[in-house]
Image (cartoon, rainbow, N blue to C red; front, side, top):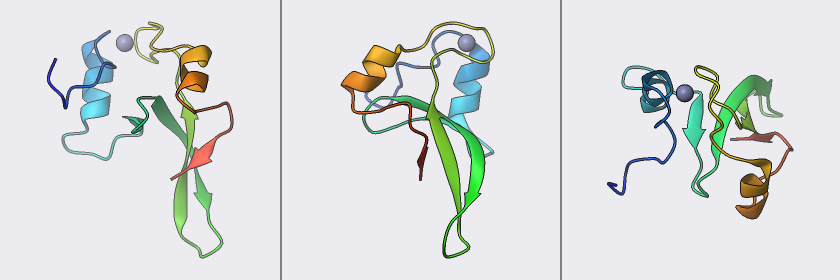
Length: 85
Ligand SMILES: [Zn+2]
Protein backbone atom coordinates (compact mmCIF):
# COMPACT_ATOMS: atom_id res chain seq x y z
CA UNK A 1 0.00 0.00 0.00
CA UNK A 2 1.37 3.38 -0.91
CA UNK A 3 2.18 5.69 1.96
CA UNK A 4 -0.26 8.30 0.78
CA UNK A 5 -3.09 5.82 0.36
CA UNK A 6 -5.64 5.76 3.14
CA UNK A 7 -6.86 2.52 4.61
CA UNK A 8 -10.32 4.04 4.36
CA UNK A 9 -12.17 4.23 1.08
CA UNK A 10 -11.54 0.62 0.19
CA UNK A 11 -15.17 -0.41 0.71
CA UNK A 12 -16.61 1.38 -2.32
CA UNK A 13 -15.75 3.87 -5.04
CA UNK A 14 -18.20 6.44 -3.64
CA UNK A 15 -16.30 6.81 -0.38
CA UNK A 16 -12.98 6.79 -2.16
CA UNK A 17 -14.13 9.60 -4.44
CA UNK A 18 -15.69 11.55 -1.56
CA UNK A 19 -12.37 11.43 0.29
CA UNK A 20 -10.26 12.22 -2.73
CA UNK A 21 -11.94 15.56 -3.34
CA UNK A 22 -10.32 16.09 -6.71
CA UNK A 23 -12.40 19.16 -7.50
CA UNK A 24 -13.97 19.97 -4.14
CA UNK A 25 -13.03 20.26 -0.48
CA UNK A 26 -13.80 16.86 1.08
CA UNK A 27 -16.02 16.80 4.16
CA UNK A 28 -14.87 13.28 4.92
CA UNK A 29 -11.20 13.03 5.76
CA UNK A 30 -8.67 11.04 7.70
CA UNK A 31 -6.90 12.75 10.58
CA UNK A 32 -3.18 12.54 11.23
CA UNK A 33 -3.99 9.94 13.88
CA UNK A 34 -5.60 7.72 11.29
CA UNK A 35 -9.17 8.42 12.39
CA UNK A 36 -11.81 8.94 9.74
CA UNK A 37 -13.87 12.06 10.41
CA UNK A 38 -16.86 13.51 8.65
CA UNK A 39 -17.88 17.14 8.91
CA UNK A 40 -21.38 17.45 10.31
CA UNK A 41 -21.76 21.20 10.46
CA UNK A 42 -20.24 24.63 10.23
CA UNK A 43 -19.70 26.65 13.41
CA UNK A 44 -19.17 30.36 13.71
CA UNK A 45 -16.11 30.99 15.78
CA UNK A 46 -15.48 33.95 18.10
CA UNK A 47 -13.63 35.88 15.45
CA UNK A 48 -16.38 35.35 12.87
CA UNK A 49 -14.30 32.70 11.20
CA UNK A 50 -16.06 29.51 10.30
CA UNK A 51 -14.93 26.14 11.56
CA UNK A 52 -16.05 22.72 10.54
CA UNK A 53 -17.50 20.43 13.19
CA UNK A 54 -16.05 16.96 12.76
CA UNK A 55 -17.34 13.72 14.15
CA UNK A 56 -15.73 10.30 13.90
CA UNK A 57 -17.39 8.23 11.19
CA UNK A 58 -17.98 4.58 11.99
CA UNK A 59 -19.92 3.40 8.97
CA UNK A 60 -19.60 4.32 5.33
CA UNK A 61 -22.57 6.55 4.42
CA UNK A 62 -22.65 5.13 0.90
CA UNK A 63 -22.51 1.37 1.26
CA UNK A 64 -22.92 0.89 5.02
CA UNK A 65 -19.63 -0.90 5.56
CA UNK A 66 -18.08 -0.57 8.99
CA UNK A 67 -14.94 1.51 8.53
CA UNK A 68 -13.72 1.76 12.13
CA UNK A 69 -14.89 1.05 15.66
CA UNK A 70 -15.31 3.32 18.66
CA UNK A 71 -12.53 1.34 20.35
CA UNK A 72 -10.16 2.11 17.48
CA UNK A 73 -11.03 5.79 17.62
CA UNK A 74 -10.49 5.82 21.39
CA UNK A 75 -7.16 4.05 21.05
CA UNK A 76 -5.98 6.68 18.56
CA UNK A 77 -6.92 9.54 20.83
CA UNK A 78 -10.20 10.49 19.22
CA UNK A 79 -13.51 10.52 20.95
CA UNK A 80 -17.20 11.09 20.73
CA UNK A 81 -16.79 14.78 21.26
CA UNK A 82 -17.14 16.74 18.06
CA UNK A 83 -14.04 18.77 17.27
CA UNK A 84 -13.45 21.79 15.12
CA UNK A 85 -10.67 22.37 12.70
ZN1 LIG B 1 -18.45 2.35 1.26
